[in-house]
Image (cartoon, rainbow over all chains, first blue to last red; front, side, top):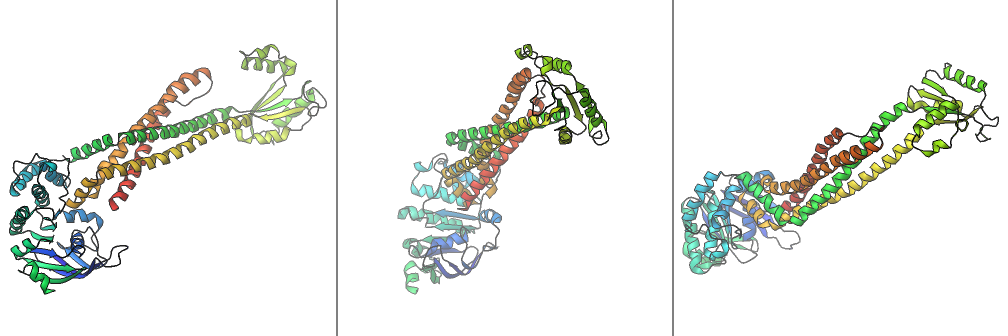
Length: 232
Length: 304
């Protein structure tokens, strides 16, 4: 599903590499946590997987595409198989919940019939039925992140990337979002989630990849945050 | 739905940037009006050249009693002079170039003068002997005027040889300069129109950067993301182009045909039909320039 080998990235003007010879394999159906301090390279790695950025060195394959050599015009079609959510939700404030989700289907050319069918069912899945005509500023943070999740999965992506999706949420709300992610994972979607949230990592006992200064320092299955940190 | 989205975005963009859009419309309108006017002038010059060059003749003015002494020391041209000139026009060196020629004596010259200036009070003061007797020479190829000029300049009894083309060339060079000036102004304005369009489009893209970000994230094709912006620039420029086309047609209809053609009835002016053929060219030019400027602007924005 994802195969990253010896990927390095140095941003222009930076003295230190954001990623330093990172290698990682992620199988279909995996649920992987990327943990580490701010600036450890979690977001850079996610950006590479979405092909927002290209590595300075190394090779990266995602969903069978070689992201080093993929032509620019194929990138949009590649991204249609990937969903992504962010800490800051990134909803369009002038569109309703329904329109926010519908927007991302319309702009990739889905038919009105498909949109009318898919949007309500995904809103129901994330627990937002009945709120489809609200605007983002009328929703709580947890609800906004549900809208973002609905938008990310409405096109049934094979891979879901989450960049600190619970970073702006209180623990109870975070737990609801993580429960949703588990349900999405159980349905067969591969999930890669960057997070600071020890509680979640400890509770879920999934694969934990620890990044430090752009390098992978540990990669364990079924351990908690503390153990993963100790292991380095 | 897809087209609905595109035109919805275009409408929003045009509304949001109304003042910029109005300035695009005005600048394209003015610059393309200048382009159109320059084109009209060129067409007019071409038409007048065709018409007048065909009719241009070379005049061999013979000496009269009133001619200046340095050109005509022996005064009024004698009958011998006239026979000599006529013989020269008929001989084998000149005849291949000459289509036909005719001679006007003093009285015929006066009659022609009175006909040409019939509404002018000058006719009351001019007498027959003030006007030169003249050989009018019509050439097979009007650009060969220099041959006649060289053959008769300085010949005894000839005051002056005048190629009418030299008058025409002056008029045409003035018209040419005017159309060059119009084209130069048009080029500067077109350049500012391009800059204005790309600035507007970039601003419009900036105000919709969230939408663009989401579209890129969920995998909308670049073409689909760019389309509303390109159409936005093209629509604004198209309005300006249509106004410019209308202006060119109006100039021909009301100024050239309505005024000039009435006051100068013997001149062949550009017709309304010619002006109408310019309209699609002006429109196409405006639309192409706007599309070009918008594509450049939005490309740079998307890459950054």
